[in-house]
Image 1 (spheres, rainbow, N blue to C red):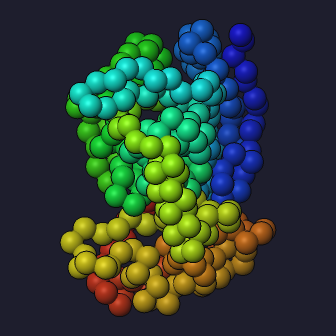
Image 2: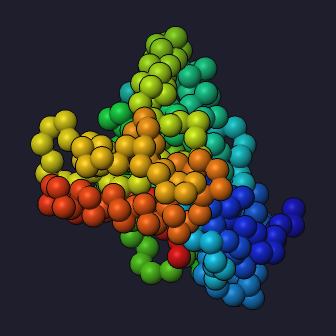
Length: 298
């Protein structure tokens, strides 16, 4: 295949918040041969490369971005690699959507990912952000990750050689651009009906408490360390009066105060101003400094 290059792609068409101006270019990479072509093309495209999946954790401003969006499109069905140490190893491409991976696991009765039900991202983004929900974090079940850099190409790296934190993944490769290309997870065998029941339970709870079908980028702020039991960034924002707070076309969700949603016609400027308003309100009432979880592209 030949590497697909798209000129001046708009981030508003590639992020779940539907916000953001144009980038320099977008490279759609489907196989390993196209990764080689990407290495040759990047120097001539200018700007800085940015790995992009479903865009479900991004807030991009409305101006021009000196970025080359690199989108993995390796979406083949997951593979069961082997059974090892009481678990089952499953390998998936970075471009595969999490809902499709979860559906595959449910059909085969593979447990471990159920807490990620309802997250609209892709495998690559889930690794890059160490996605987590309902007691599950990607770093806990990742055995190894296949990374690509323009200089060194593709290499497998053990999860134990990487660093993981709250919504953070560090491949410990030093400076420079890297791309998650594949991931391997260790899951456990269970009855398909039991896996489905847990997925349905998680989705039901999320649907009742989070705007899972809205134009949103997930949680805006990280949960601060050291909070008492039952407290979270969402609870702090809620108690500070942010639930449903609206500015133009942007609002903190009526269901969950830590979810910023685009109600239609929202702008990045409105989103950033609303985030500052929420951050300041929590600081004034509780003396707690909220740290942004969503990735802001300015």
